[in-house]
Image 1 (tube, rainbow, N blue to C red):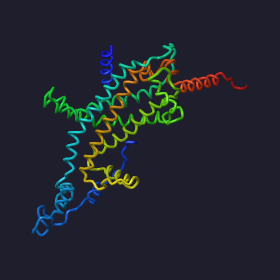
Image 2: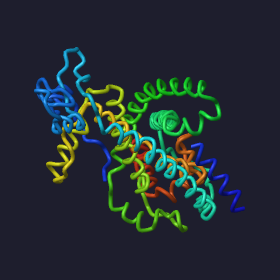
Image 3: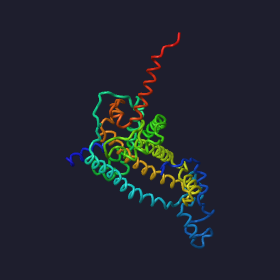
Image 4: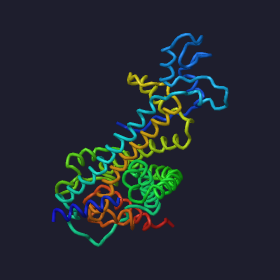
Length: 368
């Protein structure tokens, strides 16, 4: 029974601080002008007069010093970018390793939790009475966000793991075609994700500010580990955490994605480092070569995406196989009244109070 539950939870889950980057766009011509600039007439391998080796010159070149070129492409003046090797090592080593551990770890954790706890049932059984939880607009926004994120996650994970996992199975040629197709899908679906993120934020942000009931919810562990659920409004404390993670990480991923779609046009990391240095006294570099910005953006984009994937896997589990009656909220929009009373009793009271006030207002007769 333990093994069956673990396998079932694994495949169901598989089917499916403040980490936002401070925005700052700018013209990279300015960033280039602030980069170390090679002396006029300098020749790699010797001094300006060509007599002896110039260690200072080589140090500037290794640190991304920008030379003067006659061509129209000013970026060609960057001879060596040593940080590229560091980026390559992180991209091919720790990034896929830690990403795999995070994703497999959450799947294993949820499988074990399901095997021990089982499905969270409606304690008093179904009442055969329903209450409207989400409107059509709310559900459409949610599913647009969910479907676009799943597509982005799959096409993005292919760039991290596809070469090792998928290419040996389908072959190099098919993998290349699939990856190129996935790249274009990823780029365009990203705009649908950003639109849905905005819609969800506008619709639900007013329900997701902390209140005193959240402290009670945390104190009782959300009622998941034991019988009896703490009172909550439309969204409980756990759902609020999911909301803010999705919104903040979604904005951060969108910003870094935009920078990758428009290479060498932003200075987000240099600006963020400058703000951090001024506020927190850190010592981050504030002069970055254009290619460094892109390298930082690509790593940040991947790290934030994997973190969000892990959170969403847990969200999918709780909203489907993990809790009886929860999925109805995002399919039909109607939830069982007993489920609503057990998980969101304060919200049910508000809805019934509003409904009663509307009914009383409708019964009121105009004065003659």
